[in-house]
Image (tube, rainbow, N blue to C red; front, top):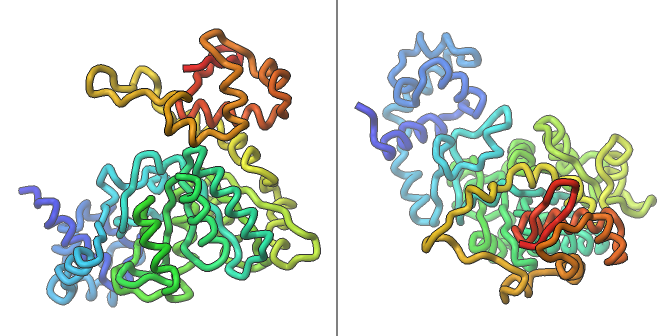
Amino acid sequence: MTPAPDDELRELLRLTLTSGIGPATYRALLERFGTAKRILRASSSELKQVPGVGPVLADRIVASRTEVDPETELLLCQKHNVQIVQRTQPEYPSLLHDIHDTPPLLYVRGTLEPSDQFAIALVGSRRCTPYGLRVCEKLSRSLGRAGLTVVSGLARGIDAAAHRGAMKGGGRTLAVVANGLEEIYPPEHAELADQIAGSGAILTEMPMRQKPLAGLFPQRNRLIAGLCLGVVVIEAAPRSGSLLTAQHALEQNREVFAVPGPVDSLSSRGCHQLIRDGAKLVSSVEDILEELAPQIRGRLPRTDQVPTGPQAPAPVTAESPTAARSLSEQELSILGQLDDLPRPADDLIGRTGLTASQVMATLSVLEMRRLIRRMPGNQFVRV
């Protein structure tokens, strides 16, 4: 008999709450036994046959059948409006399936949406400069307006500016934390966390009562990179967690971007190092959008998959009040040059006076928002 979803979750929690079982060990156990239920039914000798499971951990797993109480964890989740999303559920972020050590579950306060697959991380120093804050908020606000979800770590400095900028741009934002969601860290970001939960989600792989230990932040950083198409580093010292996030991004085959700064600023040395090593230099949001355009287009739904009929959503057009408020002058300028006759990109460059990179990046944003359609020969029409 197949256990009910609640039973499956309880069994999974018994394992994830057992000290010594991380994503890699759980994956090895799952490959050997198939389900959490079978893992918990295995004998100590059977468990020790799994790579990475020694006598101590095998005994802990056996003891977890009676000593680990998943009900307390579930009650804490209920108290703090946290849902647990398992890797097997459709709500689980699709991009996380691509990373090596995928968490078996996530604790989520807020909502995860399919559109979050179009995400970009903005990370940087806690001890940032006014320059870094200004650049971060400008980029995140523009990315939010473009329809991309902004991901960061809820830390002081650049992280907080990234979340705030995305919300100011009317976009979604995800905060990935290294602690449990019973308490917010840092505590002064409790109000910001409430705002983020209303415009996206706060998420973690850590149990509800887990404290923010230093060793957990590198583990958190791999999730920030894994949730995104790319990572933008804004101010980072030569040895910083932000550079580790960029390293995770490279290992996960994500794009890496860096914002240059003053040559005599310690806060910019990490970014300059990334640029020297091949990261994409970012001077405006167009640099990010232009680089990500092929990935964004590849993940957009085809027009023949859009629902039709009385249940279909109303089409979004530039004349819609909501769209008109959210379009920039640059977007409106290009949109105003298009109609139902295909027009080449080169023609738009000449008509608008914008640079080629500005036009191509803006066209990608308008296409992503389904306000225009790309035709053969790099031509565009208005929808």
